[in-house]
Image 1 (spheres, helix red, strand yellow):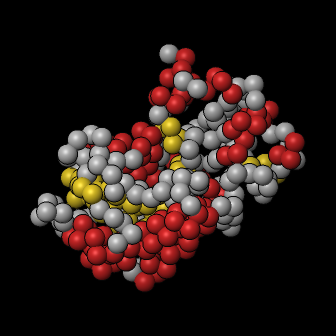
Image 2 (spheres, helix red, strand yellow):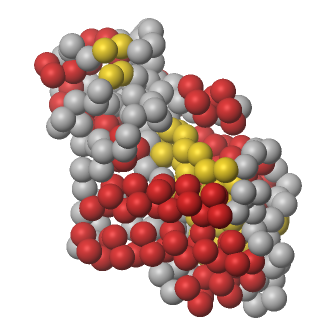
Length: 285
């Protein structure tokens, strides 16, 4: 397929561009920042400007064009990176622009980066049950998360307006690379250090795998998937992490060994997602 990737200079974006190309797809990357991978990594586009988005999705400098799919990863990546109103104005408007431009141009496949934060992060108020999944109503606790929740709602309506469209939101857990894994042993004695997201993570290469599977999926409608590793960031068994306010939570599935508390079962079942990278393998190698 011919695929446009926004946020191509970011952590997930760079891995995604490389992964899609490895699997035979033609890719054009765009971003607000130049790619560290060189001039072929991406063109500079302001996603909050609808005109720029439409032009980019029509083909930048006559390159590609006629896209079969758009992967929308471009956004302020986390709470606190900019003032709240700026984050919302950038992320929610960019999401609208991508959905609207895709509809205008007849691009029926959109895969976009939602976030684990819509599940209620940081979990100062415990989730309704564990492992958490996609079945309970979103609980944004920050302006960043509110913007992602708004994008999920927009996606549902754009898919309703265009019944043959596929708009898949990926609720990425904390995206990490090999460089990040060097720090993992530093918090093994402190359960609170990573409790804010139930000790979840996803390797950037597995995040890219999830994107490709979503792009290649033969489905229509709007859907969301949690994208998390099979394990937690801790060495101890996951049931031992459930202390304090988390101890009495309903357990909706068996929690064995170091199993993730951010369920990736839906992504496994419906997309064929299979995480390949665990931090333990990288640190203990």
